[in-house]
Image (cartoon, rainbow over all chains, first blue to last red; front, side, top):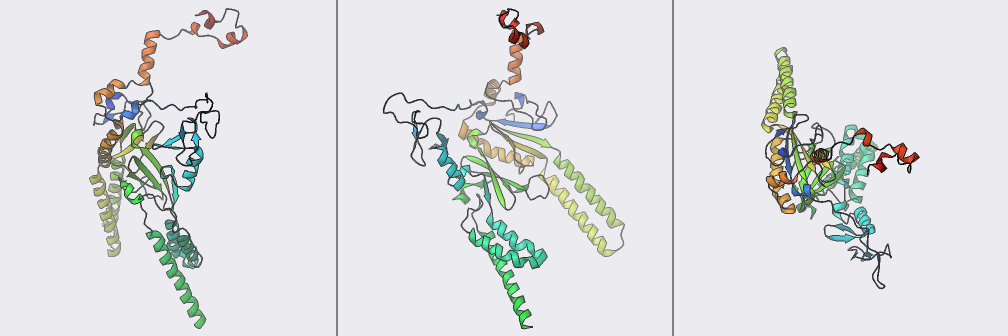
Length: 191
Length: 207
């Protein structure tokens, strides 16, 4: 048996198979919560076993870059190095060595490995807008907002929307704030 | 392009049903679902690949009843305040709040029963807070089913029932066929350590 039981998400009682794919809600035997379960074939799939890599047996056989005593089975799609079964990291049909995988994650080259992004546009906009509650703070925060808006203009934005409206709005608002400060200083000086 | 790669499945919602900075939304990619938790300054992503989704679990919750009670009580409270005041301005304020509470009450009733939506894979059982109404859950499930089926293949309900044997049933079946071991049959670990060759070890004599 490879599949685990499906548990009630409230009381963790194992749900009987009568619940599966009936399209109806049934009361959990543990807590009575009305629950509906849709099971897919992956539930019955055997977990893939990892390989440790075969040893090089014949002279002249290509060895792994990282483990020369192990037989190379594939090359890295990132750097071209030969990899054994142990070093081969498969991702969406491509094969990577651990180094390329780590570099791809850090530099955002492999999008599916990215698990966090900073929204610099949002940060800049907050710096431009929030200090308006205590407006003297804008003398400090407006230049910072402009700096962040410009410095991170080309930084990756939200994964689902690539607009720069937040950065644009932040730069415009912060510029207006600085213009206001300039006008205030000029008027104070002239008076 | 990132903008066209994902289709929105659910709108952005606060994670705990109240106004908090953490918001959650669900998106459909080419071969995966993407849950985005956003604080406004950062976004964190969790991917559920369609080929890995083992089950979707929808559990009805009492959220709708709770919100109905809250909005109903508030509407009643504002109404009592409005009826007990003679000041025109305050009366306007109280009636305005009564109207607002009644509108929220009606919206809550129209949206229907609340639920908790979970996606199960081999290594996780993850809640999707942005799906908190039964209607939306059914909508998303109806949209997901053909995509998951296309990625994994199809099993009929009969096949699923036939293939699923909970671990508990297997254990019970083993116990029925072999019987529980008697206390005297269970080897004493100290005996095994102290006198492994004395022949007094039940484990070694049992066979």
